[in-house]
Length: 236
Picture 1 (cartoon, rainbow, N blue to C red):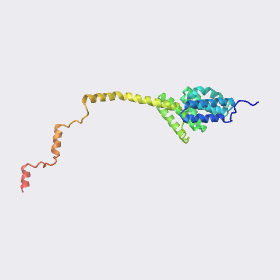
Picture 2 (cartoon, rainbow, N blue to C red; picture 1 turned 90 degrees about the horizontal axis):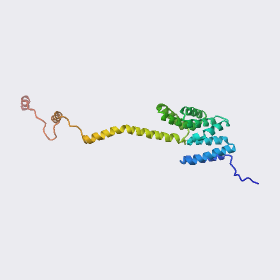
Picture 3 (cartoon, helix red, strand yellow; picture 1 turned 30 degrees about the horizontal axis):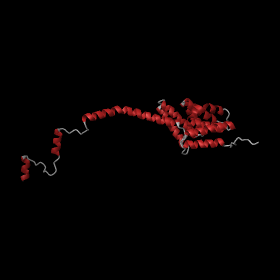
Picture 4 (cartoon, one colour; picture 1 turned 45 degrees about the vertical axis):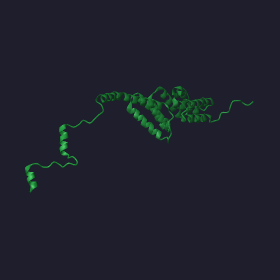
């Protein structure tokens, strides 16, 4: 009797992950997470541990690091090579909010040639450093992330965490700056209401008189000499 269990393609986990990233590119992150979760479960069921590790890493990149860190750590013990442990270390570092660990993981990814993963780790570290008020370290991490991302031939990181956090931090910074400038704006408006529109202050009377004597008016003869010596010379 034939089994009623549907056949599973050898690359089924890859297909599910491809659908996940297609959904993520379209902005449908819930659907992307569902596809990655299905890929991880299928990979563990059929023994595709590398596919399962990749799918769980994808979930960590899409904001589910705390949910998949333990599973990634367990899988890393069963998979040869350095990529699976780096993926587990990334998920654990993001879940713990450890910028130092993220910096180390970024270096590991970079040594493995996984520049996009390294850029994401640097970007996550920059978020944590910004929240801690470490301006210089934040700028350095952001520059490293941009440098790594530039190596990826136009690839865009799908990680939503640092984008939202960075935008929120920027909004808070703008509000703080606006709050600091608001008292000065209020003082300016009050002074304007009290003094009226700003007008140029007229020059002193002696300065006006000096200008009048120095600059002859149009259509009038300039002042004529009146001293006797000048008149005698003019009559010769």
